[in-house]
Length: 376
Image 1: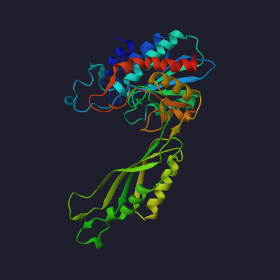
Image 2: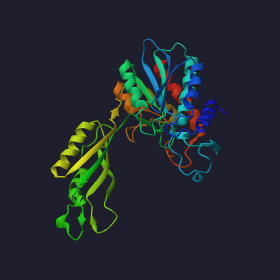
Image 3: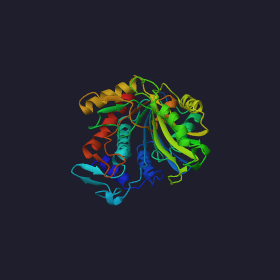
Image 4: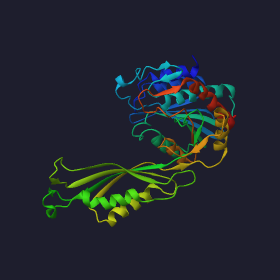
């Protein structure tokens, strides 16, 4: 059994449902310390974070960014095999976290060990940053670690996130940015009453319809470089008592904006608030910003990643800013260029999550080739 497959199986067997790490980072730290990495454990709230570095002095810092937590498996009886008993069937490794992202984390570790052994006096610094709070609230994970790094002047030049980015084969997509994510809880107040006497009530659903339609149909922009246009999606509407003869007194609406670098959260909040105010609604808005958009322009990291992926995939990768969010959104504001490279993402968060063994065993070589391009 290959080193990366053995480590991936060991990580998957630990039921590290966010934010519980269940010893994954301790296992990784013990291996990296044996490879002459300096390891710092950052326990923040209920979250474990690991910062491991090799080298130093002059030169750039390259960070391999990942997470050891996973989403809940759902009903275990729905799985073909136990989600926390890694199982290989027909050349495929099954288990929660196989693709998202314990496979990538295992490959990071093996690649880092090999690089340190091959290039003990490399330029700059190679680092791994792991958290157990990527799949959850993402408050005490990389978000807070980035704040800590900012306070102590920690410099990061390049960041490779191991999120599962490939579409159908390993290396066919290079993610070079992500949209920002801004969520809102809108409460519209009316006046409860009997449906037969609408003149004695104010229906918040009726009052809000035009404003919601304007929010949902607004064309926010036409896109930005490789980013799609900013979009707003209403995800939930709730009102009423359950009775069909009662006008509700309150309406609650959840919506989310995924936005490109034309915007920041503050300006979007102002624009949404202006629309609601223009309709004269008695309302309240609560906002949660998951992260601002980031984009990696042409440079040494992007060019190196493109060349390495083309070699592994047999053709140049698609360069994309699609998908949701990742922890790179907290590293990019430190001034780092960030890309995301990982296995095929077709099964992530699903029952019978899996990764092809051949892809998993190729990942350390892919990461090693990229590290060597940048630091050797």
